[in-house]
Image (cartoon, rainbow, N blue to C red; front, side, top):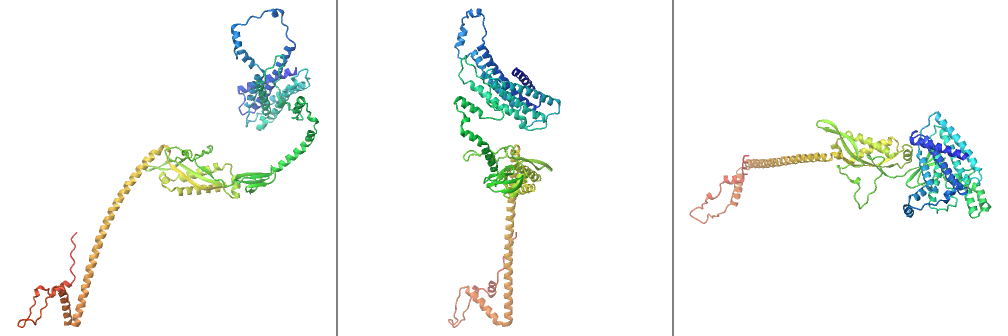
Length: 626
């Protein structure tokens, strides 16, 4: 009688819970959903057990107390089978066989176990809202308490039921204990509405899910067992060995001991070794737990890491790579950090984007190697810079790809700062770099950015970012800053290419004309310098000759004044020698002719004035008029 009452109560509560879940009465984050799901699932398991036991009881009733059929029915001749019935019997698969397969206990148990899993996992969650201080919560607590009392009475009744009266009672009693445990674990989440511990709220479902999986496996495995004869009693499938362990004190090996004794006749209680092992199990286990707890103080730091040792929550030392021992947990803990690993960070990289896969050395170039302006790149970041539209100031947009090579500083203070002063170092560096880039690019035009030296710009950005990171005590050390690309947006790349080409052509034409003008100016300057130098040379030559003649005249005048006729004769003889030295000579001896004196025809010889004139410097020719 108690079993029927529990079965009816379970069916009613199950229908109410499923209706509440399907109609969406409660919010998705309400803790009512996991509690109702767990209770609905465990009541479904209880209903499945009662249904399976009821089918076995009906088989027994039909087997041992068959119904008496009238004699007219027994003497009636059965009609012969039709052609269609014979053809249907010859088919390997027909509707009757499919119907018998679907009505089998294994299929029905597996399908209901799958439904239980769905209902139990429907309300699984991590964050739940606090319950309102209302009467609904206390009504639910009262209903659960009443259901617990009914389940306890039914479980005690089935536990004392002898095997001859109802063989399935000993298998249904563990399911009732599971129902009692789930209902008991549902009370704390209702009694304490402000408690938001996900484990406390999901604990009833944790008990139901393993039993539902066991039912599912039992139903599937039963399909592979050979069919039994009609005279053999069907097996009771809706039983759980996991629910059987809900006893006090826990006896997990009792089932193994009973099975060995029943099948092989081995009684483990009579073995001395198992008796000694049972007595020494608790001390040995305690010693092992103590040794394991002491070994939690042994910490290993790999060569690529450094360890920050915390004693009672206070960092006391930065340990190098190696094996170290300290206080056991939780009195001593080790916080691991990097030891010199170099990372690359792009300023425009999104935090959720993972690292790109490595490209093959012999394959095609990866997409991040594309540096053309007419394509969008994943690491490009849009920046607002100063611009000019006509005679007015305006704004322009550029795409920049700036990368930073960084690592955690090698000092102990840098390691402590990196661990305790920031949660996400890449995000901190990215946000700081973006602030610096906005400040750096805000006062520069596109022409200045494209024409400025990349090395100087990268050095300025690195200094500014490092200064901000040091001010935040981040413990980050920037090794290098690389300006990969600075260019207009991809949509304006072609237009900017045309503008650049026009500017280059104009600058080339201007440079060519300036070179031609410089060439003409240099040629004219060279000609003028040549003429001026020639005039200076001629003037210097004439002046030198005039000075030489004046000095010679002064010397001759002084010699005449001092020597008189002697100097004049000597000068005449000198001029005569010069004249005769350049003319053909005719020597005449005056002693040849006795009667007449020899005569010299002086017409063929230059006069003294002409000889003196030839000795004087010639007058420079007059330069032709320009």
